[in-house]
Image (cartoon, rainbow, N blue to C red; front, side, top):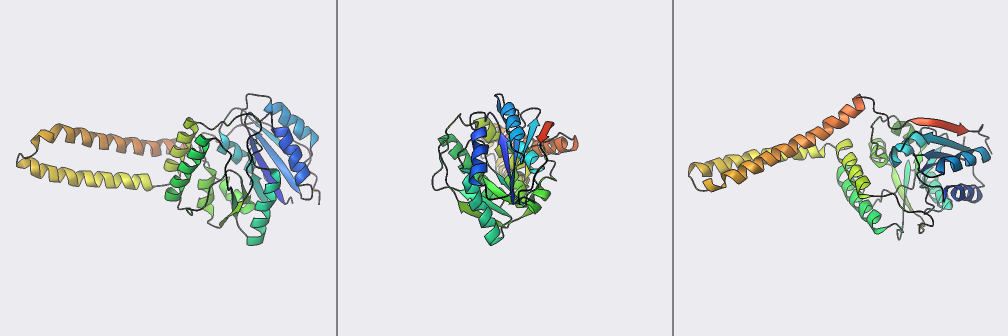
Length: 304
């Protein structure tokens, strides 16, 4: 068995993916590992380059998806091919030096963690991505009950036993960290180096931030429903108090605003419940997390 697998979701990573794989083989040459490249509907030459890499290196598996499903979906696909004792998830942009994988691996081994997240003294991402990360971090601390000082980095190491449980999920819009905290709380962190992006540009956008936020809220927590109940309860109390005042004609001129307010509360409640129903419908209808177009790999040679 391999010491660890390395899952790399690839989206428009043509400028960097070949150098990344070569560096992985150079920096981790003393370890038994496999690399799983998942092309998530790239619009550049990523698919061709990944195919060439898989043809060159025996321990590289190339999975080509039929279209763009999103980073987490691509990672879920890659995790389903993992055969190592652990799996490291690393982006294709080269901002995390591959040698840093060993820090996460040795941390997991020495302290028997199920998952080890990376964190940085200084992130080299664009300011908007840093803002999005902070927003998601606050949200997950509240909804997932994760430690407040734990940064949920995309660069992390996960034990095979946890992966086996994670990939059972059939959520159409999976959130890897949400699934991790449903499975285990035995989580550690390790400081790593973060570099400036050398090639290309970030694909992080406001649309992706909003989509991720909604996926976390409605896919991994019941708190919004409980808040909706509280909003409804306090609206009823407020309405009863208002009716008491209205009976004495003290604030009858407020009638229209109160009706508008109550209608707004009701519409928000219906919209929130609709999100949960919609997510349930997508799961029940069998909407796939990803669709594989092709898989390329040579016979894996155990280099023990």
